Image (cartoon, rainbow, N blue to C red; front, top):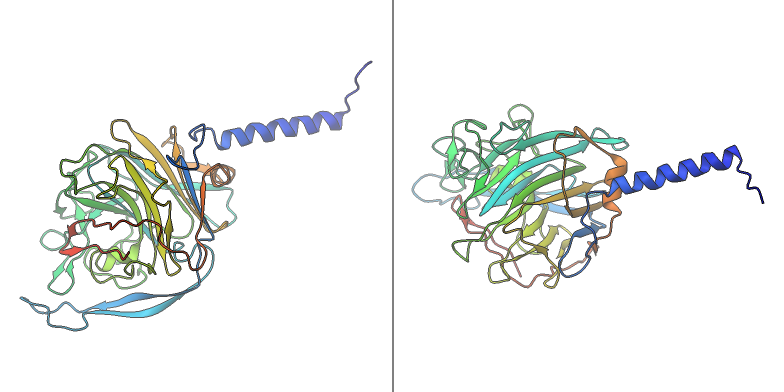
Length: 375
């Protein structure tokens, strides 16, 4: 029997072939096979956006040396939020605690809600000057930023060794090693002096990345010399660091978690040092990967992670990737959708969600303040 194929059938076959090929391209650098429990390769938070209020810092009273006698010195007022991804649709900063080797960082964002591609807006490679990205820390005072007796240290420009402050943004080229005694965070090159920032800002203050964004980072986390000093990567509402990351800020303590924090991969003191958990905090409460599910700490080999905050789908996805081309100027929306739809442990961040990890998570003293989490 002779098989007749119409031109329309051939066209349909071509479309199907292209569609399948395109779908494969969308997830070509995901770890395979995927693991959605235990040792994870992907984690997706759904129903992220909340409706409510958090305490936004509107002023910080500096006080008079040698002691802070002002009460209250941290002035706040309720800020209402609502909508997809809220409050993670606000400006975010990305934070790192050592021991950590950072190789590459890139941030991608869409130009509009319906954009067909997300453009690379910030980037850095070890030993190179960054593009629209500034390394900062909480050592404000002598060289950059400021110090007050009530507020402690503000943000400062980090030096090339990421161990102290320096006088100007990226004044020294960073080689990529962050020791276990220090933390850094990244912001855009736009300062609050260039354009007003939301909430109170003091000292050295820059803008973060608002609305939808994708962070891609390649790193490893070598063994700690001190078991009580363990590495982490996390995201914060940028207002937190612009006031005082470990003092007067909008983050809140425990649950509810205020203006928003995402622990992307955090090794916990007292837990397995080869494992890192993820948790999310906002006005809705807190939840996360739990004690039985984790991302493997990349101790001896480099790992690449992609973290997507997507307003359109009201979701956040964390995926371990096999590779990433940091030279690419954009990522197609179809690729973003491929990551958002890829196999991953799914955690609903519905109203009333509770924190899953039972471990306390101290991060040491930075800028004179100790980070606190409720249990």
